[in-house]
Amino acid sequence: MDIITDSVNRLEEHLQCSGCEETGVRLDVDPDRTLCQFERGVCMVASFGGRSAEFVTDDPIRATTKISFMFGMPLETPNVRGAACAIINVVTGFFCLSRVLHSCPKASHTPCLCELTEELRGRRVYCTGTIPALERALGSAITTTVKEADIIVVNNEGIIAPGTGDLVETWSGKKRILFLGPSTAGVSRLQQKEHWCPYGQQTPGSVPDPSMH
Image (cartoon, one colour):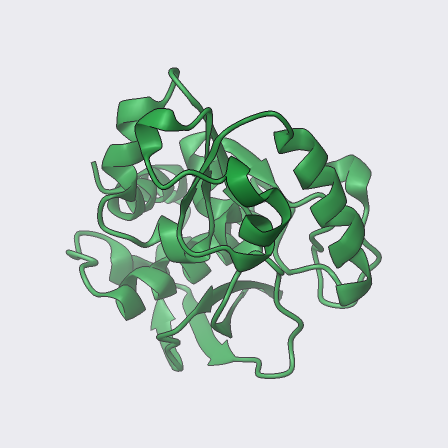
C-alpha cells in the first residue's frame, strides 16, 4: 500500500461533487520559516482557499496547480510526493479535518521534545526518516530494526518514502505508530493514525495551543 496514493484517493472521495478539485493551489517556498525540530529540508508552502499549510522537503516545488493534478497520478518521485503532501495538508486544513498546518515557534521546541521524550520513555523506538533531535534525546532507546521496536515514528522524510505505507499496514494494530510534525498532519488524519504536534499552529505566528493535540 502506498500511503500517499491511498491518502490522495481518500481525499478525492471526500471532495467528490464539491467542485473544489479544480480550484487553484499555489506551491511556494518560505526560506525564513522556522522548521519543526523533527523535520529537515526546505519549507514548501501550499496555499488554497485563503489557508496555507507546509511540507518540509529537500525537493520543493514552486508552481500553481489544481488539487486534481494528484488524482490518478503515479506520484513516484520525491518532489511530486512532497507536493501532494503539501496539498493534502492545506486541503484537510481548509475543510477542518486537520488543525495543524504550520510548525511551532522555536520557543516551543524544548517543551515539545521534553513531552515527546516522556511519552516514549521506556520504549524501543524505530524512526522512519532521519530525526536527529529525537535520536539524540532517546539515545540507546532508538533501534534500527523495526521488529525490535515498540513504537514506530514517522516524520516528513519518512512519510514520502516508498515503503512507508507497507510498513504502516504491516504493523498497524501490532505496534504504536506515531506521525510527527506538521508535514505529516494531513496524511495521518486521512489515514486515521496518531499524530504528534502539540504546539503546531493553524496560521503562521499564531499562539500554539497544546490542548488542541
